[in-house]
Image (cartoon, rainbow, N blue to C red; front, side):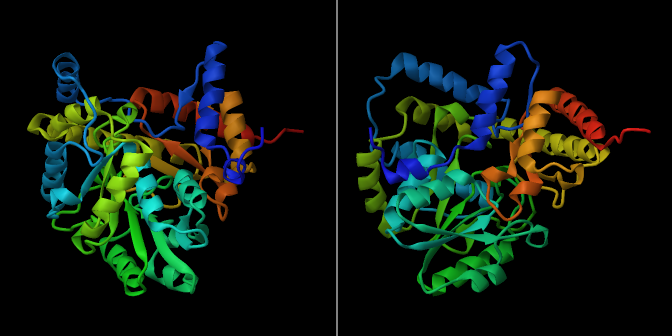
Length: 394
């Protein structure tokens, strides 16, 4: 049957494609170390699991309102104040079916066909696909190590045009794990706001970022008209629960409510009731321990990559990703990932997923796996790279 131009234009999400290939190899008996998917190995905090079990036994679990459970929206608003020093009216909190649904609502509410939207290159591919799906002309802005692979005010000014209607930025970023400095993020938002353009700021990894005492890192601290995206998947380890949220301007609440009613009715009622326990003292303590564990894993990975002779141009300061330069191996990113999987049993993601300007030279490594798995993967990777660099003797 004929399919839409939209469907035909969507490219495969390579992280998931390599996950399928890794699964096929495992099914055939191969040992594969998965460092390609950003999925914490911890799972939901124990208090959340207990709450889910109780809700499943005792509640009818009917639909909630499209904006989410009122008590969960209140808890999320309180979390923003506690974690980031930002006071948010709970009315502006919209609970969604994962951060992807929050991005869907924001895009549907803000984008008209032909609107130019600025996005950093590299960046998370699904965000660009959503924008394009609603008719936006996505303008990828090339970044490099000098800007920590992030947009800055200078780049924004250089690439802004008369057709620019908004920007989407992630801090910390997937795939690089790097953050935008708070003063730079403030300047970026101010530049766009002065031109009447909207700002969507993806902060789903913000609570995994290295803390900076006394410094507000959320865009909401200086731009209460920005749309901020958050998730229960990363800091709280609830990937398969498909629960996220966004904070939107007051006058956007009714708009996104209508969209949510029509697009997916509401987020999972069971997940919402369980997520109330994310904000308990017990769960926050667990999540903070996990944040420290990710920092330890990052140190392990950076050391292992150095030992393997692979360069990390900008060490990450958040999320659980490292953007690795593989150009010294003589392979492009796609070939490197294909051969690393086939020959060394290590699954990575090629930079082709995340943009074009430096995609061929970089791969993304996720350190969301356990330390034991990471150590094994790094040893395999080191052996693989050493083999690539060996020259035949005469």
